[in-house]
Structures are given as structure tokens and as C-alpha cells.
Image (cartoon, rainbow, N blue to C red):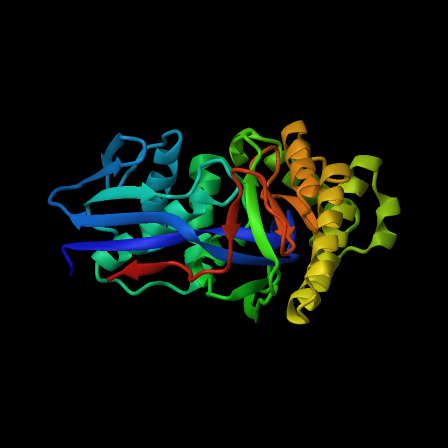
Length: 343
């Protein structure tokens, strides 16, 4: 067993396919270069010691029986507890956490944190890494049960499966992940923060998820993946709009897949605009800060721009044609490798 290991898990960008993951739908996503690193060093005793370098904060809890906590501590404690719950035995350790992901930007810093914690502790114990779907569910449960965020599996699967130069077609009905070569020519993807931090548990995210579940129940389908536009007459207005977003977004994912595969960034930009309109009007997860950010990017010449992530703040993703200059504060993003141990 190693005495010290370091794991890195990247954040992710969701190219298109928002709020489809917990509805058994489709998404096109990719891992980014920025992420969370966790260095795990074995220590004696039954206590887990944690230091978050970027926050200059610490935590300490029993390795086998962590109690609930708030903020970043909930994700770390949840990851440790869920490893135990799923039959893995993380050793007592000192965990040193560092990150270059902006928190609250909608790039899935929480999923990156739980994945990096799990990978580091499994490696420290000399244990074999479980299959990606199992590890993704362990980390998802840490968010559900410990942080109160009813997330889907998009963030975890994109971080685990990332591949340089490829977007990932994720089918959440089967959890199949298919890498697709991504060549946008001289077009670039950028993220621009809205200035409004996003947190799943504190926003309307969980409410939207509950509304989708209720819409599927009323349409007598297992999930909105099995629903059609023709079924919407069975729903009251609000639920019909929620379901219409999910159904139409799955279609936009398939259209975007064709655009990426065929090197057609102009069509991709149009699909980003349509996705944003649906998120704003049907799913109602935009805000004034988001709309102002979209307007800034479009004024700068973006071929398409849309809210990215759960909504209610975060960042806006835009596709910039050659010769255009993104507003100050924007970051260029491109597909990068997935989670791994650092030599």
C-alpha cells in the first residue's frame, strides 16, 4: 500500500444537453484542463484529517462514521461514507485539496472533488478502481445524501471519461459513453462567468427535477426520455413546458452531434441559441445576470451562446467565430483528459 498518492479529477463543460441526465436523456459534454487535486497521505488512527488549501480551511472526522456537515466538507465526508457503504474500505489519511476550478461557475467542482477524493483513497488502500458507472453513482450519492443536491450523472461521467480532442455522447438510459472527435476549425468555445454563483442545493434545481418526475408520472412513462411532444397535452402548462424542454433538448443533442461530426460550427452555434431559449422560456432557469452575459457574448460576435449547468447563475458557454474577441473574463475551453492518478 502506498503511503501517499495524488488524484486529479477535471471539471466539465456540457456542450449541449442540459437537465437531460436525470431524465434518462442525452448530452454532449467534455472534461476540461482545470480541476481538483487531492493528495492522500496515510496516517495512523481512525481519524480523517482534511485541509482545503485554496480556502485555508480544515476538517477532521471519524473515518468510519463521518457526521453531516456544510459546504465543501459535506462532499468530502459524503465521499468517504459512500465508499464504506458500497463495500470499499478507505484508510485513515490526511487529505490535501487544491483546485483551479472556479466554484459556483457551473463547471462541476463538486463532482470533481468527490471523484478525486474517491480515487485518492482507493489508490492509497491499494484497492482496484470500480467501473466508471459504479464510481459515478458513489459520487452522485455523496451529493444527494450529504450535500442535498439531486444531481444526475452528467458531471461524474464527463469527468471520469474525458478524452483530449473529443466530446462525449452520454446516453443516460444505458450509461453508454461514446467519444466523438471534435474539430471546430478556427471557432473556439469560451466560458464567461455571470457573476452569480450557482449551487444546486440552494437553487431551484431540485424543484425542476421533481417537476420532471411528476410530468413523466402523469404521462405514464418511466422517464421523459420515453415521452413525445404529442404527449404534452396530458400536462398542465408548467409541467408541459418542463417536459418540452427535455424532449426538444434531446433532439438538439443529436443535431449537435451531427454538426460536430461534420465540422459544421455554424449549425452548432444555432443549436446553442435554441438550447438557451428553451432553458430560459420552458425550463425557467435563467436569471437577469445570465441574460446580460448572453447579450455581452452575442454583441461580441458569438455564433451561439447558452446558459450552462443547472441554471440560476453559473457561466455562459459561447462559440466564437474566428476574428472575434470574447469579452474580458472569458476563458477558452477545450476537451481534455479525464480523472486520473498523478505520477
